[in-house]
Image (cartoon, rainbow, N blue to C red; front, side):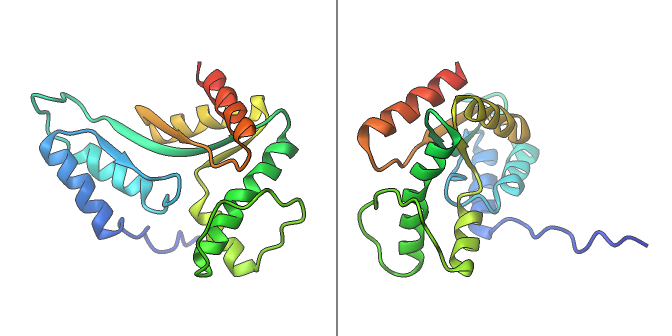
Length: 171
């Protein structure tokens, strides 16, 4: 007999409260899924289920953060993404600081790498085609009404290019 395991844990109380409050007041709901995605789907569900129309908003409106690192190739985007991975590793290890430059041979402690992968799981990293597909899949999966795209790229010109790729993907 197959065992589906325990039911998913409810969203973090603070995130659930913010979803409940926005729903109760009939306000839009924004979620920082670009760095704390763990409770995203549960919080969105609570918000949509409990939403009450208001003079300001007649139906639920969900805004989600999404990391997008675009470049000319998938490999270049992966390299650029190592800056934010290093920054998150430094934060988790108690060494906050400036965004580090990309590192081609980035090796992280497996436990740190696992935590970073979870924290940055709402990320689209790749060339133009992969970015377009990734953004569309994220929007479809979540039903987001609006995406707040962020792109922590160390090099300013490459960051601008990443945003251009994201903008072209969105249309």
